[in-house]
Length: 173
Image (cartoon, rainbow, N blue to C red; front, top):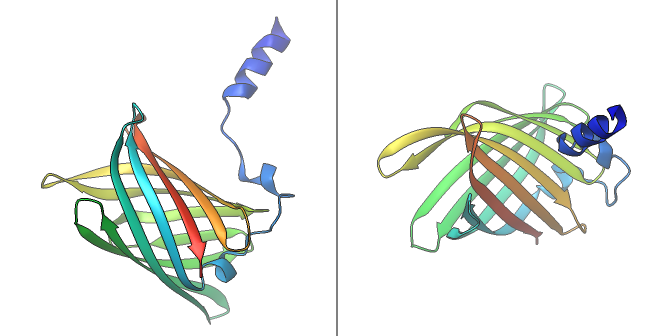
């Protein structure tokens, strides 16, 4: 009985970025997000219905400031309904595989960790919906598939309630 309970709890636990440490190709964030990257995505609500489709043009570069790697990701979104949005991420590598990030619509700091081919991001986004700003939590998981292709799944929630999911594919030019 005890072993069934332990197995059940283990099956429900969230993945840890360290479990991907041996996965290849290895993700080097400052190498992948350097230059121009195209992204294609959808937002699905909690029932799986596609609510938005979008593309993103990302222009990214890194520099070393005071001995720390710092990156800028300038993102230009274009949604299927014709609306446009931009976000500029400012990333700092705190130590190998540990990152913080800020953007104008991110509440506080995003925290990131990478291992192997994977990056996990967690942050709160100030999301405008019909004239109201909602603070929603994002749990992002990015997986480098080839040196040019990365896939991203992001769960969006508020007060622990699942609101939907963003799915993206990135292509490095």
